[in-house]
Length: 183
Image (cartoon, rainbow, N blue to C red; front, side, top):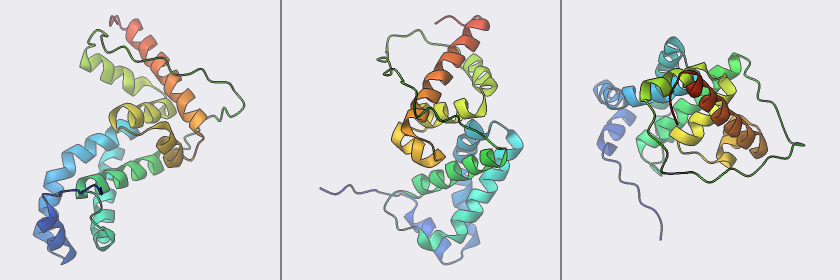
């Protein structure tokens, strides 16, 4: 059975294909906040996130004819935003250390009974993480990518993605403990 995606904005997308500027503005209004937040979580800079957002929408509207509607417009746009965000980080010369020859322990099982942490403290701590850690953590936890997909997106190995994720979790926990946020 093939998965069917129902895009409730298909009419707006079709209007955009016909060059309708009002339809473009409507799509922008519908997705701008969510896509800005995706970009901000990755680039960790307001101005760069705004740049990513604008470039992603320009890219999407210029390539709208390439959108085959195999997914929703929102998912397609989100992928453009993520790719643009990662390109911004690369411009900053983001270096992820390859750990191909290093043995990496299996990821421990998630404890779903963990104590709830304060959202603002987590946001502040996330912003203090190095770019490589924050990007892998964001793609894995917030955007739902697995390590294979992250490795492909960032052009690193799966092993590197896993180790960056584990190190990011440890660093985030350490930062939260230093701030007095109990686990």
